[in-house]
Image 1 (tube, rainbow, N blue to C red):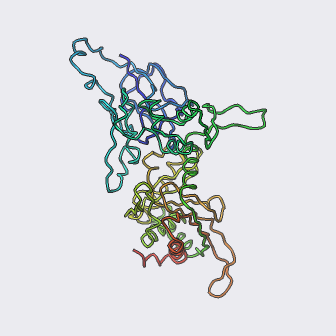
Image 2 (image 1 turned 90 degrees about the horizontal axis):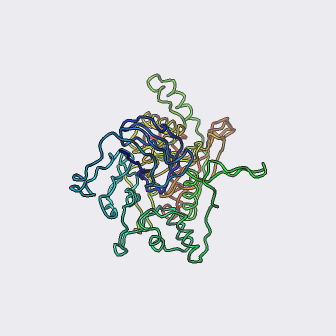
Image 3 (image 1 turned 90 degrees about the vertical axis):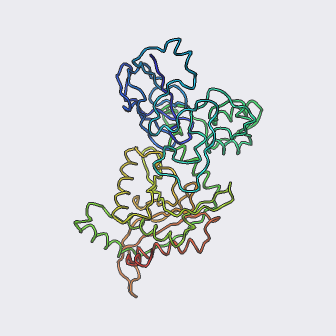
Length: 451
């Protein structure tokens, strides 16, 4: 019989995904958990495994096409007889066979009614959880077949960028929910509501046709659709830039001793395979400095009226990829040794470059580092990742004349640029953090004086 596989919510609470490429074709025989396709969400490229053993019957979307969560994606001809009338009558709809709940697909479909919000836990989110962010909990289940009465009072299903867009447009998203029913609300739904009621919308980005690449105009310009990671990053940066009052402070430091240490570590046969470089030393220095200035490892919770201060460091590392900027995290970086940090950083970088970073690896993060030095840049004013209070830009290491022991000498120097949320961190705390990091880079032995 024919079984349809609908695009699941990949544990992110997002409304759609783009089919990057199909790895099967109609007529192919597939097995359970065989990879069917690669799809790109606003956060990452994800491989979709098959929930059935069978023969591919129909592909409901072409490569490059955007598919809404819950829409048919692929159909299978699955071996087995159709259920008889008597057995069908004896079983209720809630007892029908459901596809396996595979890793990365979020929660299983609800048996009836609308999904309810999970209770928040006081502790941290488990890094290996299918639902990477607790804020996505209301969206972890595919749309239920029946609408929910208005008196239930649950928040309409939408993503944070869509809710922000509705707020900027002056639209009550509850009214839009009444129009669309029990599915995830999109920006197009907001625009349609405004058009119907005679309102006006001023979207942040212009609408672009949903094609892989729009045709060039008169061979003098090219139009590239804004979607996927770049679209998500743009929305997040706009939200962060206008929500958190940014302050950036700079400090140039003599890192000659650190570079000498790196050279010695690379010559050590026991450590040579770990590839310890300047960014690894900076990451370790950041983790140590955050123990003395925990405000930079905090986040502002406007809804609760609280500053949340984690007792761990999930260190974000900004990575420039072909699909745009992403910030995957090294979980519990503060608990790692220098070789462990080096290995984690290398794995993170290789995964990001291959486009295989998972949504869970991109979720959370308590403090971030961006290495602008790899582009030959000395300093900058980085924008905070949403939900974080600090980000450190690491500049290029340059040999230049520098005052050293009362004389001018050729030394290796680096500029640190710290941006922080001035609601959470004051200038003195930001300055102390940068000075602590700089002290370790100037004299690595100072790390022995910190926790």
